[in-house]
Image 1: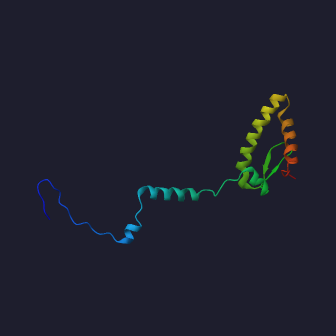
Image 2: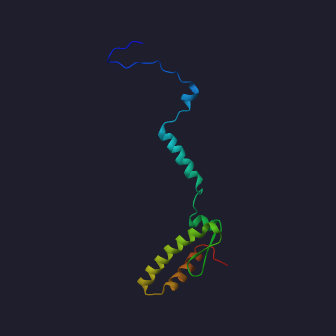
Image 3: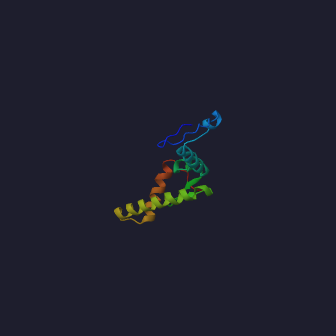
Length: 119
């Protein structure tokens, strides 16, 4: 090993086995893998209204709002009903009709278009 006053001692590099070099991951790949596993641990997917209807997990009430048939559609029903209420309110103000009348008229149209009514 030669050294002068300006050089840093160099030591022979340790040779890595092909196994350890093949399985070394860059830092970003490790973070991406961890993020992927975290996301996979969450719900598989969230139902939308069309899927919930086709699976008979919601039904249409006579007042223009949907009713959850299963526990996993309660959040969906709350979101859809909040949007419907806002729209029914807008239409009722525009037409000077009570909100419940607008909802009942909408319910008739929704069922006429193929949605399953509640029994």
